[in-house]
Length: 140
Image 1 (cartoon, rainbow, N blue to C red):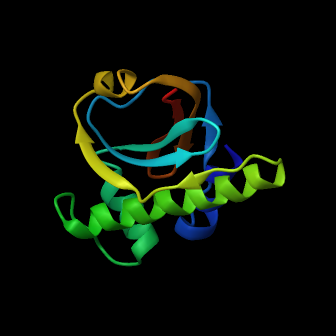
Image 2 (cartoon, helix red, strand yellow):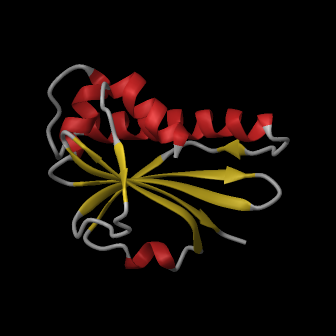
């Protein structure tokens, strides 16, 4: 949770507040980063389609449209930053993980994610631009 909170604030100028909600938006964009260590995890960053362009614009510093490659690249970069921060935090605890490059996807529901593995942690945040979700899925 702290990795997400710090990166959203430092890189996007967003103050996020954890909320009790555990739901996923019905139509969202998803960026995933595989983390390999003693087990395999997938870090997931999800944003509603209406929120994703503004999140990407905050990171990139210019207007971004919903269907542009710029939005995809910005959100992949943001997920990579969160994964790198998480890697550093885990390393301080003696856990070694190596993140792979982020992948961007568009979804209409979260059902396909649950087939990928078990959700270990999920954090839902509220921000001035809308809700954001970070989750860690364990693959094995």
